Amino acid sequence: MTVEPRFRMQVESLVLKDGRARALNNALSPADRGAFNAYLAAVIAVLLAPRFPKGCGPDEAAAFSEEVAAAHRAEQRPVNAFVIEAVLRTVYGLPSVFGAVPVPANAVSAAGAAVLRYLNNADAAVAAGIQSTLDAAEALIDGDGRSR
Image (cartoon, rainbow, N blue to C red; front, side, top):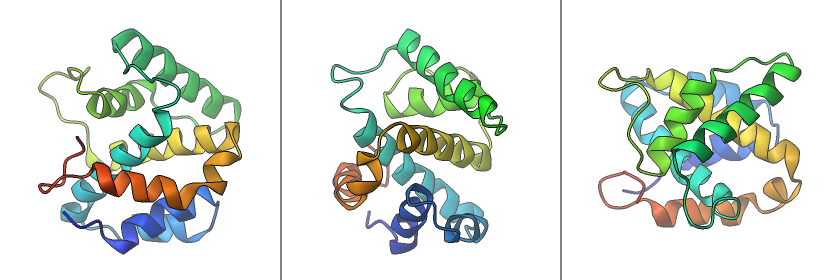
């Protein structure tokens, strides 16, 4: 799958704190949202590789999700830790915390954005290296649009 340039632009805008991120997010159709979320998961996988070099298990996913949610609560930007954990579980191939109930695609996008904001706020290298991160994320995407 070729990653849509607007998906790259949306993630880049979010990391660089450019106001276009919200408009790009709002412009996603329901069909586009799934492909965007797959790309977002790949970006998160690239960014979290140094933190979880041997992979991420359920306990690590839960702890990191709470860490992200707590930081967002402190910033008065509440986000659901369970949805963040659902995103991480998708990235690392773990069973869903929600069982058979799908997480709404918009909630997945918001949780992924929360992870990106958290990582970006914690490390200036995220913004400085965003182009190489986006390239690496594209390389993770296989022919059917799912991250490997």
